Length: 366
Image (cartoon, rainbow, N blue to C red):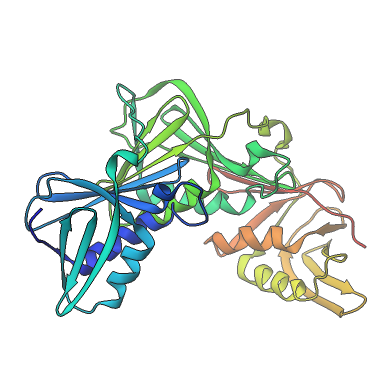
């Protein structure tokens, strides 16, 4: 190919998007590379770890008529060390020459034929999603994903699409978060319910890519899903298995509720959490008439206690909870005041808010 000039900043941006799937060790050298493929006066970049694939593209000054693979990490590191606005790329035999001002690098390349073939999702129904709404749904559920190995299906996000509703649910067995939002008005109604489990890493990388575009498109395959974000696409394998029937653990709405200032409750729990130790994780919540007493006792560290005004007219009750479970939800909500439903000292605490339900199980206090 002839010399191709590209903007260094744009090249760095696109490689940083793709670098997320090549992190970590691999026994296949090609999985640590980025595939460059010319498409007219654009270069399409692709990176994959076989489970997660991301593609993106940038415009160039001339056409690239070849495809090749080059170390993504080294390519990106080199570009970051330059200061010039433009970079010259030149391919000669088995090398990629990277030139900037009076400096030149030569990187080994790998044949594009060694790069894994990309999945193709044809003749599948496309679902449109509002970017800001999807960001909100991920934000409301990401913290309750299971992180161990025993419950593999819980290590992802359950997505359910039916009629004109999208629902996302996560659970780590100690808490559950589920949120539903309507699809865009222009979206044709989904006749048959679709449900699938997207791995946690794929969802979190997707959330990083959700930026300026108003909408994205989702296409569902038999064992993978495809997210189209315009100039960038993300394809991920799905988690096989059946997500537990979470609806069974969500209790009917309780008459016993307390309303509390979200920020005051959050800050109090953060302070109590400072005294947490592995064997003393629980914080005590004492519900009294129009008052909540937050306290924490850890023998080797000390004690904490604070009274917070609330609206509550139910029976006095003492509850024990992992403070982090409540901190996580209070951090992402925006309301000045929140309402929690209570069912008993050994029952869950439930928050319902405009299509969102959060449930946290209690714990015994040491």
